[in-house]
Length: 230
Image 1: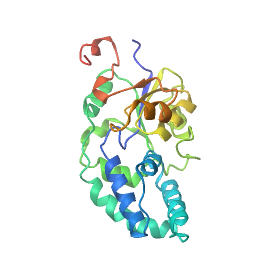
Image 2: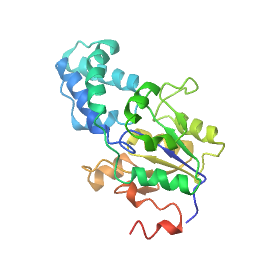
Image 3: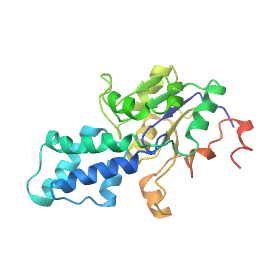
């Protein structure tokens, strides 16, 4: 096993257990306008930027009722719900140990997230271990031209670390949009998928990824880590 040249991490649903909280906030906001979102629709929102999600939910509400709120009206309902919920987010299994291990091995790390800078600051505030990831690309980064599933966030993160976005650059994701973005960037892609998905759904949602993981506890960064992952 070769130590990766860099590790690029998603945040929501990968390092922090926020995705159920995001789903709850989108569901409650959509219900305010009379539209119940399905589990497939909520899955489609995972990993995407807030404004992209708002535009998608707006379209679903419009298709359901014939009349939709503006993205601003939708977010005015959704954001207070989300901000309250996200303060409860806990680390995903293995996340703290993996980030610590990257630091021990001097593996460069970057955050490649769809969340805005302000949202990351809110979610990361209780989690001092995240300060080890100094290089960050946020969803509202002025240099980011397109959000996931476009590859831009991973290409920009790799560039800021001074590494090539190839199979020696490992990307860690949990969402179909994020996995597609990392693959398009050229990275080696490791996915911790949502636990409720069966094998058929995994194959459909995550084609071409290099590794599906039960949790980040299974990540092997170098030969010395093999025994830990058993």
